[in-house]
Amino acid sequence: MLTLTCPCCGITAEETELHPGGEAHLKRFGPGSSDGDFEAYLFARKNPKGVHFERWRHAYGCGKWFLAARDTVTLEVFGTYKAQNPHPTPEIVASIRAKRPDWQPDWTETKTSSAESLTE
Amino acid sequence: MSSNPASSSTGRYSVFAIAREAMRLHSGWKRAWTSPEPRKKYQVVIVGAGGHGLATAYYLGKNFGITDVAIIEKGWLGGGNTGRNTTIIRSNYLQDPSAAIYDKALKLYENLSQDLNYNVMFSPRGLLMLAQTEHEVRGYKRTVYANQLQDVATEWVTPERIKQMLPIINIDGPRYPVLGGLYQERGGTARHDAVAWGYARACSAMGMHIIQNCEVTGIETGAGQVKAVNTGKGRIECDKLALVVAGHSSVMAEKAGFRLPIESMALQALVSEPVKPSCDLVIMANTVHGYLSQSDKGEMVIGGGTDGFNNYSQRGSWQHIEETIRALIETFPMLSRLKMLRQWGGIVDMTGDRSPILSTTPVGNIFVNCGWGTGGFKAIPGSGWAMAELVAKGQPGPLAAEFGLDRFKEGRFIDESVAAGVAH
Image (cartoon, rainbow over all chains, first blue to last red; front, top):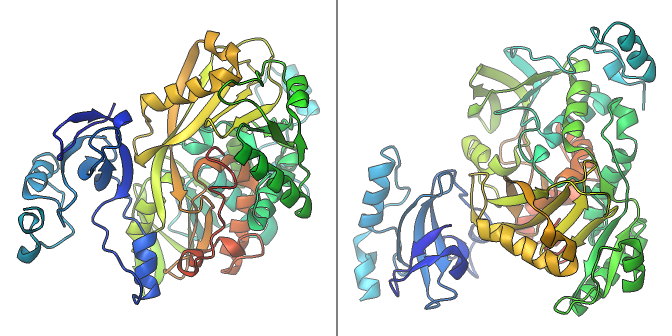
């Protein structure tokens, strides 16, 4: 059974205690955006065969949303991190790289939006 | 509807053929389809030799005379979702575009064995969707009325009639009493492997190439058009490319440079040990996410809902099996005494509105047929029929017109996620 550690309450929870919430780090496009951007935000998904960043909710626990990095083929979990992070944390990236040397991030880190400034 | 193309090269199956082969110790049967090496170029390349891909090829040949076709398959023919489903066939959908394409499929299934000269064991034993909440009662009555307008024969049946039709059912609850049902007499099952094999044989007889164990590793595009696909067996050029790969649609789309509104998830099914005939209907209980039919071998064939997270592993979560069985046991108490023999999973391609995508794409001569999600098997002939028209003409005919990718931009959904419940 899939087990994830909730980064909010620290409990290692089984799948039955969690609720999946789909792809993480979607950039929201709302009113005033182009039809293409809005459609992509709502529907177009990476749906990768391999490393996937996704939202989970600790539904039958602390109730908080958090994010997880997981392989959709092997179902291996690389780690979990708080939902406030705009991108996967350096620890998560290192954990993925250790097991998937060929994997490349598809985002560029910006210093102003670091996790610390948002969470602390 | 001309004479069957399978007659030319592989020999027509008939009672006379059986008698003839019996006389000569069955030495004259030929392989049902050939396994050629790919040519350098085809007019149409179809990726995916599952039911939908093979049916697309078949109707390209039969309806449009296009036989310069290769069907490329990563694994073995029919080894994906075509061989992993619970073989349910029905057309009792709420929305008009769905009813049209699924009922086209059902009508084609009714004569498919004759058309393909291959016994697909279509068994229109009747299909019953149980209403176990007041909401479902209203929903299914609405579907019955919609089906009447769509010329799809379905009827509302009472709990008493359901008990009569199916003595093993417990209609009294207590948690989910059976309040009635949506019954489609023409619904039923077919032999899923035979559907793939029958189409493959007919395609092969038309001179099409079915190339198995050949993974597409890249799609060459230029100037908004596809030029060729790179495969494990070399580069294959094509004038048109059809992607019919279900759970791997996003992977193929990425190779071609676009994204699809699809998420891949695991859907599981399981069968029990064989028992005496006790269930001669297909039963769907959507409130509790379970469906049930009895195979010709006597096994109870049981399916449930998908897992909720992205998954390419063809393995689902254990607790989902438990959930499915736990829910069904109240309605079918006899299941609690059955041992389960086998369990397996497939990767289904889920769209937001739970309706399929038959569409042109941002790449001019690439066409996609995907998004059938948890309910693709029943649609195979209709899907192939509509997809063949889309590929041959470059634009959708009436059956596929509403299922384009543009519906997600325009908000013109064909919402079956509520209408059909969860289970398909």
